[in-house]
Length: 256
Image 1 (tube, one colour):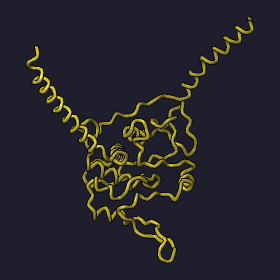
Image 2 (cartoon, rainbow, N blue to C red):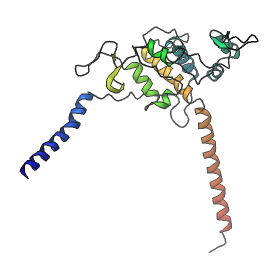
Image 3 (cartoon, helix red, strand yellow):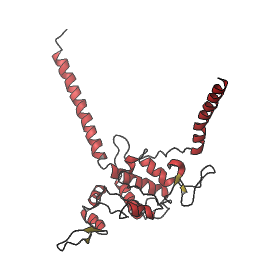
Image 4 (cartoon, rainbow, N blue to C red):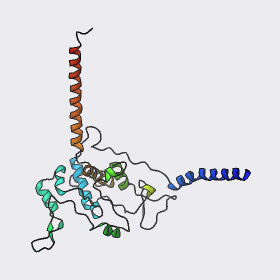
């Protein structure tokens, strides 16, 4: 009995120590930044200028590794681009099509109906070019990650020197907002890398905010219409409730 009791006490002590050790190995936790977004709240809308700047950041920086397979060039009309501008942007890319009348595949310029072209032919090629890591498709990234736009902004601005309790191997980088605080993607943004023609600050923080806005739109392009419809429904229900209350008072007015 004494041996059994001693064994039980030892096992209990070890079990109590496990969570502490696991927690200690995770290192310091950093909350996601709480950014003020134009699209937040019941009446929030997308900032068209920010969307265009965000698309420029994605196109010039992020698209080198990350695809957006669910977005078509013609969807850029929602950002304020004209049909001619969209046709011009799509025409800068080539797509394999066919077969032609001779049964052969051929290359053609992009069309507004085409989806954004992926930087790699397939996932294996993407992993081979990125040290074994598969860059995620960004079409729905703000819906797929807890924190949404704040998560994207946090990852893009969370790089820095690794603290002493975090081990960073060769080819890895410390990022305080990444799970485990280690990421294989090099810091993608540098100040002045993307030229803004509207005079907005060309800083890492501004780039991160703009591209996070663009990716939120890509994941939820119907956000503004949904909010407008919700407001109309609530307005209708409010008026309908008032009418029903007035009818009820009218019907029961003579009842004592």
